[in-house]
Image (cartoon, rainbow, N blue to C red; front, side, top):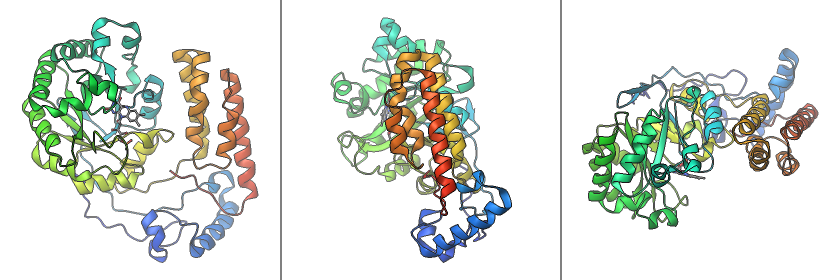
Length: 409
Ligand SMILES: Cc1cc2nc3c(=O)[nH]c(=O)nc-3n(C[C@H](O)[C@H](O)[C@H](O)COP(=O)(O)O)c2cc1C
């Protein structure tokens, strides 16, 4: 990635204190409210600024306003497809359906992945499985991920995906769920580079759109299997590799070993998309700096924070990263609820949103109370009402507070 990291951030500040004053602030890249100096400055500035600009916007104003010289990020190209943005939404089974992807895309993500779809189900023509292929022009470009073990079935499924209009087909080489591994799919494919090569060859032959694969470190922590599969992938005509550097046994535990991403990047000339443990925009920048990866893929941190992708873009460009305006959080709760109702119907959407609306309240006051209040919503109107009630509570509470409580992003 053409990221110019030479530009040193200047210690300029707008509404905050110079970064040098508080060491913890430097580490956290934001105001440290436990530090007395930060505390003093935050309440002092808040009082002054409230007078200047009015209340609502300022309560949550991000105090981290640094001026960097703008870094440049280059386009990531996956086969013939040029992406304007190197940020990628990871495939998340049960989560990255059409309404979720549209929300993330609208919030600034460069490329969205579907949840993994069974190649067998597609080939059998299962109506339930085919529904996973639903897409909308607004989310384009869309990468659709398939999983399976049989090269012929995967090739047939890939052709179905391509004819559904997907911009990219992805093969899952990373799923570590026992039920999937038992069938020889997911991370089981990483055990045998020959079989991996056969799968890639067959799928490549069936497609004219770009092909990507998403892999793990493999079955042990050495990374040997990841390197072997990456080499086979490049030779077989894969256009980009997404790397989640955890072993099969790790699941999602422990730390992702980003050095595996660096080693794959050094080995292949096709784009490498780094994934694993990006929770903030700064994490993404660190991953790019440490590994040289061409794009960054975010999974869990995008749940409840679809704005992380535009924050990452800003951070990669060396521009100031702002905290999310809580007003946008309330708006997106309503939008996501409405879109889900339209997509799967009112009753199932409301059941689903009982646990999901709370995602967007993370870091806001009384989030627990809100989560409790939406646990039994049965209609869209009821959900919208609970969101409006919660919005009122948040603004009332913050009006009473002298100290700002910016949401954690
Ligand atoms: C709920 C959930 C569902 C997932 N589903 C998929 C999937 O369908 N396909 C896939 O390749 N990875 C899947 N993953 C793995 C993620 O794509 C990603 O590799 C992993 O979460 C690490 O990235 P993160 O630290 O940004 O979350 C899933 C992870 C989670 C937590």
